[in-house]
Amino acid sequence: MTPRWPERLWIVRHGQSAGNVARDAALAAGLDRIALSARDVDVPLSALGAEQARGLGDWFATLPEGERPDVVFASPYLRAVHTARLIRDAGGLQGDEPICIDERLREKEFGILDGLTTAGIRNLLPEQAEFRHLLGKFYHRPPGGESWCDVILRLRSVLDTIALHHAGQRVLIVAHQVVVLCLRYILERMEEADILAVDAQGDVANCSVTEYALEATAVQGGRLALVRYNYLAPVERSGTPVTEEADQPKGIRG
Image (cartoon, rainbow, N blue to C red; front, side, top):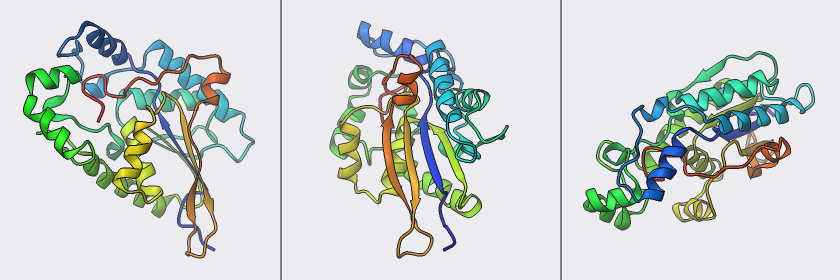
């Protein structure tokens, strides 16, 4: 059987970002806006986030030769690229592989909601808060931003690229919380209610691992089956604190 999918697929949320500190401060103070001057794409890892990424790299490095990732994709956001580099520098990849930056893996875009806390949206843009309540997060698209459906559309394209060029290989993706969830939605053929139920169980932790393995099926090319989701043992083994803050330092959780 000629495989259609990678032999193994790991999807990792980036390490804790420095923006989490500003976000937490704004929430604690009950502010409408988060005090950040940089673009969301330029928000770096925190010191803890870098430590988490190195711990995850150490875990990948313990995998036997020939079982580590040999293809790496990352969101262009600084915190995702830095996480991927730290994993590679810790010996977590099969050789010194270049990181494939793919803008289709970027964070969900929040448009006019960018930089607002949840309270800020209610106070400053009450009509958007109402629209989101009526439509639900899966379909709500703020002006200038994206819905989850928009993210899913671009991620289907990413998976087509991976299937075309990297079938039978071991692929690592480093991206964001909504990307992790939306990839699960696609790969496991979920419906809206299914993925929202997963989302309601709690945040995707920083540097957690979601893993799929290729299984032979009656359908030519096989399928990717979920091995584990939100797996935290690599970070915990390194003695690094686990963080599960929402992924959006400049906007509400999408």
